[in-house]
Length: 302
Image 1: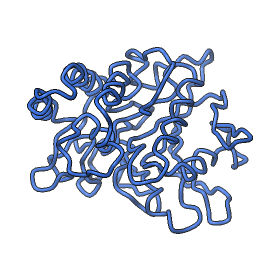
Image 2: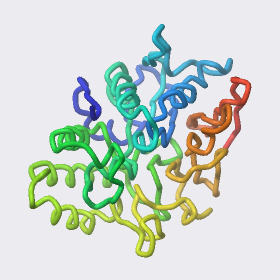
Image 3: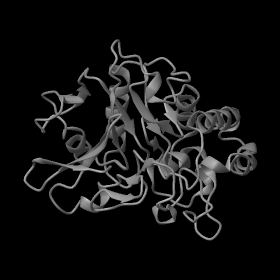
C-alpha cells in the first residue's frame, strides 16, 4: 500500500501554502505538524491525540472504537513532515491512517512533505538499505507514489505563517512553490521509465537537475551540500530561514534561532511519553508533548 487515496488532486497555490486554504471566515487555520513517524503507529496516534488531551485546544483527530484516527473537522491544516515509513513495524497501517485523513479532510488540509525515506521510493536503487519498506516496493507501487506527487498530495515544502515546513530544511531561503513544481517535474519524468533500464541514468540526471531537493552531501549523504530531504540538522544555523524540520532525532524539541526540529518519536521509543506535535498560528509556534504520565505539556518555541 502506498497512500491509496480517493481525493482529487491539490493544485497550486492550495498545494503550497496555508494562506490559500479557504476557511469561510477571517481566521486562518492553525497548522499541526508531526515528523518521522517511521512506521510507529501507536506513537503517531499518541502524538496526534495530544490536542484532544489538552484542555486548551480543539482536537485535530477523533478516535473510533477500533483505535483508528479520523479527521475531527476543526480549523486545522495537518503537515506530515516526512519519513512516514521504514524502521518501525507498521508501515502499511501508518500509510492507511495518513490516507484516511487526507480523504476525510477538506482539500489541502493534509499535507505530506517528502522525507529522505520517501525519496528512496523515487531513487530506489541508489540506496543500499535492502530490508526497508521504501526500497522493496514493486514498480506499480512506486508509480502510484509518483502519481501522489503529480497530484499535489506529496510535496517538497509547505509555507506556514512564519515558518516553512520541509523534512530536512535548508540554510538559505527558497520558494516552496518552486521546489514543489520541481518535484512534480522529476516525478513526471520518472513515471514512464520506472522498472526499465533507462531509470538508473535518469535518476542520476534528476539528482543533478534538482539539487535543492535530492542532492546528497559531498562527504556524507547528510553533509552540508545536501538538499531538502537529506541535510543534517547540525548543518543548519541560527541564520537559517524560519523553518520546521524533522530528519534528525532529538529527545525534546530543538531550536536554532527560528529553525525548530520536531523529530521526537525515535529517541523516545524506550520511555513513556516524549512524542508530540508542533502547532503554528500567525502569532506563535508551540510544541505539545506527551509526558510520562500520559498528560500533555506545552512549550512555546518562539
